[in-house]
Length: 214
Image 1 (cartoon, rainbow, N blue to C red):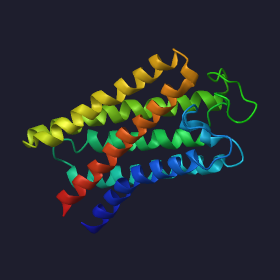
Image 2 (image 1 turned 45 degrees about the horizontal axis):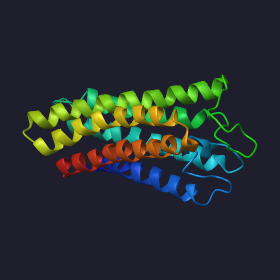
Image 3 (image 1 turned 90 degrees about the vertical axis):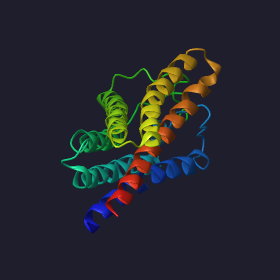
């Protein structure tokens, strides 16, 4: 069981690594304001390679964690679709890292002050990667909610279901609030909250399953 535990440890470490890397950049990157600018913009500029690596490495860790989940759960309930969706979530992060978003929201210096209007292939594929991330993560929440409910673990079932509802709600609210103007602050901060809730849930899930393996 040691390889399984090691793979699940990768998934457990992925969320904290991603969030910590983003927070460090938020407050050290010259000219970057986390109150106004979405975290994907950290992939741009001379230091953009740091956030690109953050996306890709985090995605690979979640893919490894998904393999561990498959080993731990298959052929039991949730043992097929749960790991597959977590792996897809990781793949979406890798796509979002390889393909960068377009400049906007005033970053990098000289970029348009508003929403990026680019139809560049990289920008479109970055958005597609984020779509994959959100959809697969929400679906995984409900797959695991069902699994824990069937096992009589109500707290975990409720936590998974609540996360599955919270993620699209936060995303929708970020779009609604950003249309009000307000210097784009709601959009940026709510999308960071989305990452904290979603990535955090996936990593806590890996910790929980690692204990089951123990």
